[in-house]
Each structure stands twice: as structure tokens, then as C-alpha cells.
Length: 248
Ligand code: PGA
Image (cartoon, rainbow, N blue to C red):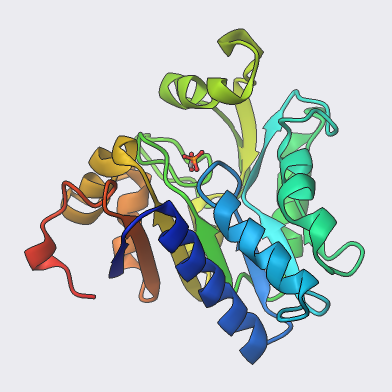
């Protein structure tokens, strides 16, 4: 795992956008794995600006998002469909249908999940996977558990995740309690992974990802087994790691 420590959120966002720009310039048909949450917002803002300035194009690219709540209307302002429209898709030039966000109405989740995994495979898998990390060490909605789930699945959200995400809703009671998420298989099969963490509230999770045991109780720790991961941190998120041990 390559670890890069940047001064602050702005620098992390800039470095991440630059990595995406470079990959798209080298391979315009890159398959991107995209994340929601506060962390990638600054990177998306920069990518949108670059696209509007003609410095980058998504015309030949494809994207697959990591997850979506179950039991929320697709056009609810806090659905991940709405989030991606607001922060990226409405501002860039993906071809119609080239960007997918998981979706199940809950009637046949197994079929919806299998169909999503099939679409990722048919696209040749993910070339560059963007990730954030939850304060509990989750990646996508792969929550701490006894075992990893390989496939896309529907999962109950942890109390800590519901608490973390309550800031986006009027009250904690409105936060959906389950979600459809890609499994660890889609993530670990990505050719390259870019994971970002910013802010002091991520420092413990980052410490456990980098220095703790590799365990499904800290889902992000398994990324240490992947051959091509870059971890971008700001100073606050990096505050607990042992810099002497970092190979960057
Ligand atoms: P955040 O969420 O970017 O909103 O902190 C990250 C995550 O839960 O994966």
C-alpha cells in the first residue's frame, strides 16, 4: 500500500482528481468504481471543472457506484443516485447508461445484486476503484462482521454508520437501515484502488487499517492484500499512524 500524506482536504482532493485525470488520459475507456460520502466531493468538484474546461472526458468511460440505500426513493435528495447526479453526473459527459448506481426496490434483491455483479463483470471489472473509509473501518457498506461477503448484497447498516450518516438527514430516524452494496470481491478485483481519508474522526480507522490485524472486523484492512492501492490522507487522518513504517 502506497501512503501519501497531504496537508489538508483540498490537497487530498486535488491529488485524487489528478490520478483520475491521468488514468482517463491514458485509457479513455477506463471503468471507474465510484464512491459517495463527504470525502470524494472535493475530487468530484475538480473533475467536473476539468471536464467543463475540456481537460478531461468521460465519453468513453464507464462507472459503477459502490452502494445505495434500500427503502429510499431514487429521487430523494440523499439517495446516492441524487448525490452522484448533483456532484458529478450532471456536470460531466458520460454516455447515457454508462454510469450505474446499485438499485433494488427490495422485492427481489438477490436478482438485482446478481445483475449488478454481472454488469461489472461484463464491463471487464473495475480499473480504478475510488473508496472512502467509515469511522468503523467499513468500505462501501461492507460493515465489520465475522466474514467478508464477496458478492453484491443487501446488508443492515451498523449503528455507528447510521449515526455517522444522520448528518445528511433531518433526524436519525430518517436514515435508512439497510443498503445494497458491492461485496469485497468487486473491490479486491479492481486493478487499482485509490482510498481517501480526511479529518481527525478517521484517524482511528486509518490506524487500524494500516497497522492492525487483517480482519473482516476492519474491512479496510484487507486492502493491504491488494497489490495496487494508494491511500491518500490529510494530516488529521494520518495523525495516529507510525510514519517511520510507511513505504510511500
Ligand atoms: P464519508 O463516508 O466520506 O462521508 O466520511 C465514508 C464512508 O462511510 O465510506
